[in-house]
Length: 40
Image (cartoon, rainbow, N blue to C red; front, side, top):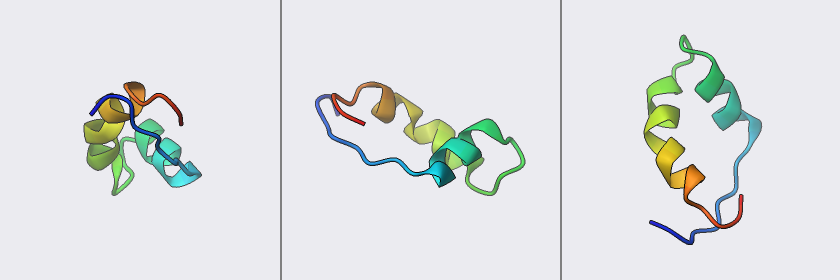
């Protein structure tokens, strides 16, 4: 999914950094999509 524009809020960042967060696995799963986005 290259070339996407993605809006991120602090919930994603917190979940990414906190392994105990309920959304941590989802954030890890979405990370490649965020990394390939042209605009975040």
